[in-house]
Length: 252
Image (tube, rainbow, N blue to C red; front, top):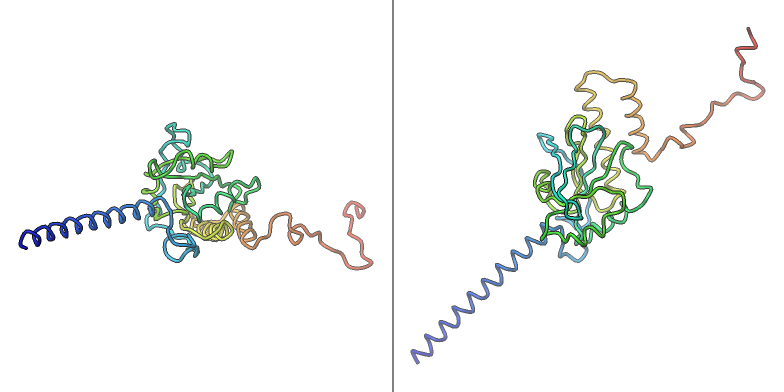
């Protein structure tokens, strides 16, 4: 009887160790999937409410960092986003993220509408084995820069994919960062953040040039969905009935 109790106690102890090991392995898998941007919730989406848009924000220091990693083909590469003219939109995506699918599809469109004409797009994935290099390379649209760099995810404090960061290379500052459920939401938030950022930088310089005012007006019109070819922008001034435009040369 005593021997049976001892054997039973040993069996229970072994089972408890096995269960503990399984739970620990499960937790490690969950954390690895979260770092890869893979959601286990039925509707997918970013951390928090599935598919819910999150407003852009900027860190207190507004730090921007160049991207160092490897290309989808496996070659070492560096993408400079500081000390360069124009804006760089960093799109932190994953091949296994279901919410990222809508962004992969949008970025493959030849007429992709970026928040500003000066913006270039760079897609950033994580290093292997967190990211599948083959699957990632198959999703990168032709002509779009892409890099695998877990260090960049750390530099920009990326909580998961999809995530975006807009960088002003001229001032080496981060305009804004965050996520959204789809590209339309993300583009509109980027335009708003960029408009606010331009106002802030103009106030810091203490002056507003004509080019700055024109660019700010373009940003406001773009945020409202009005382009330079919109009829309200290009409408010719009308004259009253019976009147004809004056010809200054005829009066001389």
